[in-house]
Image (cartoon, rainbow, N blue to C red; front, side):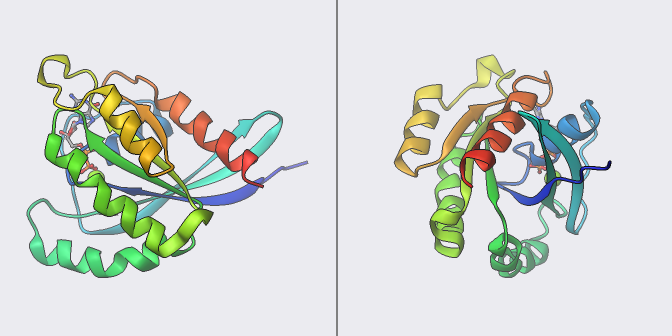
Length: 179
Ligand code: GDP
Ligand code: MG
């Protein structure tokens, strides 16, 4: 008997270049692609995952945007509320080697809270932990911010494949607990 599981929408937010697409690619296909590809539009991928005998259908939504395309950035900004609206999970990513990308997560978190209130599970993710010598944001800073905003927290490296599976386990576990 086919168990399709319950479907959940996950949205990925955060500055350009922090590694959102790479995290999704690593989770979906178990690979890391160094070629930088950013195209316009919003797309989603679907993956079924199991957690404690239950099946979860995760829909990963992400924006495709060309780098430095301010028209595209503006257009995306106007799409954000509808993008977020029916999401169960917001994954907000920063680059641990970019203080600015960490600072900018606040506005993403606030926007998600404004749109979804307490219905949404927010996960703050510090990516690129492999850039050890370039780190600008400590684990403690990440943890503190997550606590402040009532978010879950995880550090990852899509490049090293570090903590990608645990990230999605944490998400499905939180979805399970939220019912
Ligand atoms: P997005 O704009 O947030 O979707 O970012 P991308 O996933 O396209 O990644 C932007 C750039 O960062 C690409 O050149 C990736 O190869 C690189 N990148 C992504 N994740 C990591 C990581 O964990 N470590 C390192 N060193 N580079 C990464
Ligand atoms: Mg991308």
